[in-house]
Length: 222
Figure 1 (cartoon, helix red, strand yellow):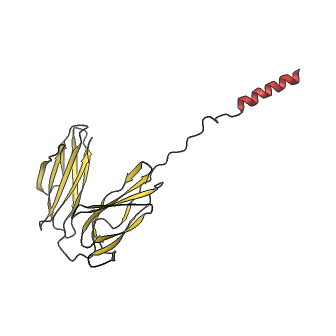
Figure 2: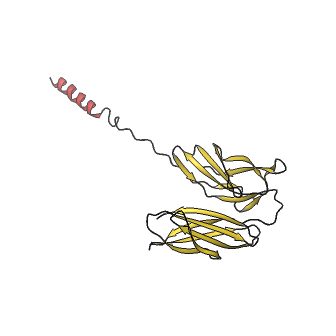
Figure 3: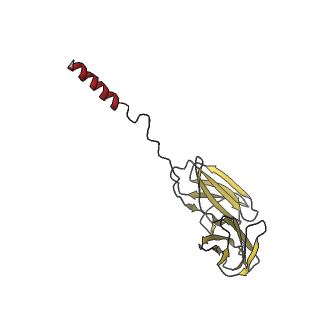
């Protein structure tokens, strides 16, 4: 009788311990994209390391560092003179692309992991082979910071290879038509009152002494 009771108790103990946590497995850790940087062509310079592929063309190898867990990358190259965009998707951290000579471009890369994306900064360059010494300004880099009092500080900075950048026109607004806030200004920032939750657009036109110009635009809301 005592033996039977012991066997019953042992069976209950085994049943209560067995299979613990089998119905609640630890979920796999969600992967995130790691930060990465653009490498080449360098920002705001003439790219002189491409391979000549004809009278009017040059092949340039775009390079960037790897983003942890990324499965692919989207390379976007914008011709600043025609506003045409060339987009390529690759699984490597470099790609050689044929481009026209003597032309201003901007480029950026977006790391991809499933539905997750992580964009890089945008860099500017001139393709080699240009004989002109009259370069248009690169598009200005725009940044916006919230002052916490119903206003924002909008800042911009331009670059020009021949150092003849003169002034800027700055437009800001929330509708289809932007308001000219500053014209022919040499300032590099301004304060602007906003309505919380509303989206605004900023356009900065950089102008040099040879009547060349470039345009950059960004959007923000707080």
